[in-house]
Length: 329
Image 1: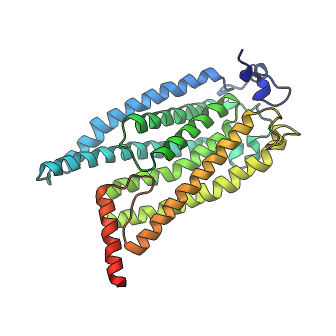
Image 2: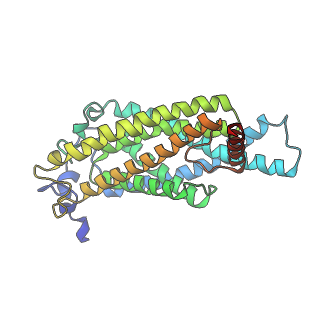
Image 3: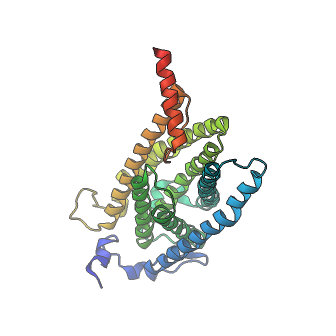
């Protein structure tokens, strides 16, 4: 056995892997095992196939069908339309997934005690039997982020926040994998559900921008701001992170301290650092969001959050700024 796989580094003092794996459960419940992560890989492959099918055979043909009465008149127009429809298909695929994932995740987690009392994420850990439905939810979420990483690296157009998104997805995959192995899935489900809420609106907003539906886009962007602040700047730091920093140590192990780096186990400390890194990314994206809100109020141009600023959007933004400067003169 590899030295880093020793339960000493992963589980509370006096608890072994055998103690958790051999724990009996009621029908419909299970305890995690590292071998289950193959399900995440398989669902990731399935979701990559889902993306190809959805984009190529459903959304893009539908977009062409709906626009058949107004075909572009130039070759450049044809190319621009093809690029737009491809990107809209990406957004529609993600928005549909996030909507289904958010609704199913919220339903599943709302039946669990830790949804109402976050300290239940740590109390009696790691002996938390996992409902089979939540296990599937967890595997599918991990698989989705594998599909997102594959898309960013090999399919999507490179965007201005390429590295931030890549880091975010790798952090999420590390959290999903590590929390599954050591059975910290309770806090994982809370994070996944709360994050999906705003992602639905972000991708819907991108579709509205591509279609130049400015009024609907402004309303959607306002909703993005509200949900982002509520879930990622209020709920995440003041409920989840606060509980991680202050509630978890004593409930993980009586004498456990986050900053005592020589103390075992190390895996919970690794999760704490990843969750804190996620908070830093949230603050970075919040800065971008509020900068967009400021530009919108001042110049009347709504750019998209977490999206590359395409040429038309950049040109419109510069025109608006020049017009504003002329008014000042």
